[in-house]
Image (cartoon, rainbow, N blue to C red; front, side):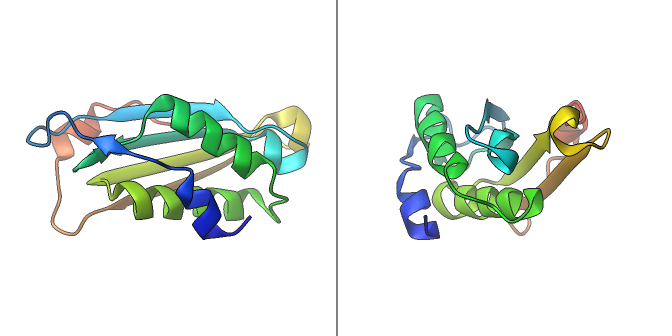
Length: 130
């Protein structure tokens, strides 16, 4: 599935209060085999748009059908898709595999991005680590 097709699944709605910084958290598990069984968590500070949870679930189903070469490639694609469609003030994507699938104790990929000039260190400091 190409990026444009994946991104078309991320239909958004308007932010109910664009004047306030707040964090939205969505998480779910990909279905399939290998990397497709990863847990995906997206935390973001909305700007103009938000992502309904049911849309996120449908998106994860589609992402899980793709044969990713690595957990890192999957995480990068999710971050790029969310950035492209939501344009959040700040976003963090965490993708992890259970230890029984990888043979190692932990395999976690954490990516963050933010809009230029946006900073709310007090809000982000209150977040638990991934």
